[in-house]
Length: 189
Length: 189
DNA sequence: GTTTGTCAACCTACTAGAAGGTAGTCAAAT
DNA sequence: ATTTGACTACCTTCTAGTAGGTTGACAAAC
Image (cartoon, rainbow over all chains, first blue to last red; front, side):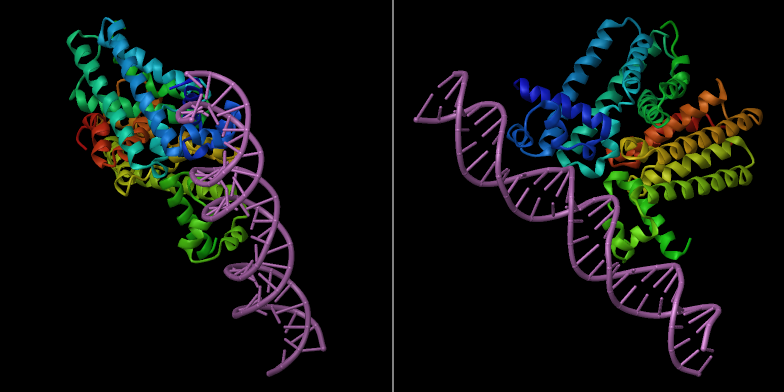
C-alpha cells in the first residue's frame, strides 16, 4: 500500500462520504490526485475494487478507533459521548455522511462484496455500542432501559439519521437536536 | 395533471426511493412507462423538473396522510405507532427509503429548489411528530421525557436511520430492532 | 358538412459529454 | 531484465437534453 494508493483511498473515501458511490467518477479523483484516469485502473482495476478497498481500510480504522475509545474513557457514558462526537464531526465537515449511511443509500450500485462489508461494519458498530451500553449500565453512567442490543441498534440508526437530517438542513444544529435526547441519557460524562 | 404525468410521477418517485436521484435515468422510467425518453422531456423538460414535481406531490400526500392519521387515531400513542408502521412499510417493500432519506444521500445531485422542498418536508414531519408527542404526553399514551421538538427530531432521525440499516442488512428485522425502543415508549396503543 | 388551423402528446433521430474500462507504450527504479 | 507506475489514445455504453416530424382530436371558418 504505497503513497499513491493511500491517496486514492483517501480521495475515494471522501468522495463516497460526500456524494455516494455512484456520485463520483474515476475522472473526479484522477483530477484531485493529479494523475490520469487510466492510472487509477492500474491500482484499482474496477471501481468496485476501489470501493471495497476503501471499505476494508475503513473497517480496520473504525475497529482501532472503537478500541481506543473504550481504552481512553473511564465510563460507558464517556465512551458513548465520544462516539456521538465522532459522528458529529462528519455532519460538521460540510455534511459528510459516515460511509455506512452513504453506501446504504447507494445499495443498488454496489456489488455483493461491498454489501457484505457494509453489513459487517454496521454489525461491528452495533456490537461495540452494545458493549458500551452494558458498561454504562453497570457503572451507572448511561440510562439503559431495554435490551442492550436493541438500544445499540436504535442509537446507530439515530446517529446515521441525524447525519441525514443535518445534511438535508445544511446545518449541524439538526444533528445536535436529533441527538439531544441521546445525550440526556448520559450521566457523569 | 393527466394520466401519463401521474404515471411518470409514480415511476419517478419509486425510482428515487429505490435508487436515489442520480441512480435512475429517463431511459429507465421511459421503459417502465412504455413511452419514449423524449416524451418524458415533453412533460418534464429537465430531470430536476420531474424531481421537484415528485417532491411537491409527495409533500401534499404526506400532509394529507399526517392529517388523516391524527383524525383516525384516538391517542398520541396510536398516531405514533401508525407513523412508525408507515416508515416500516418502506423498509418492507424491498428496502425502499422514504424520499427524504433517499434525497439527503443525493443532496449533491439536486438543485436549490429540490433542496428547499426537502427541508420543508423534513420540517413538516418534525412538526407533526411534535404535535403527536404533545398530545401523547397529555393523554399519557407516550412517554415524553424532554423537549417535544428535540424528541420529534430524534424520532425522525431514528426512523430514517432504521430504514438505512434495514436496507444495508437487506432485512426488515433491522428496522424493527432499531425502532423497538421507540415502541416501548408507547402505552395503551 | 367539409375544410382548415391549432394543439397536445407522442415519435424518430440526433447531439455532446461523461461514464467505466482496455490496449499498448514508455521511463525509471530494482 | 523485469517490475512498477505512469502515460496516451481509444472503446462502448449511457447520460440529459434537443430538433423536428407525425398523429389524432377538437373547434372555428367556409
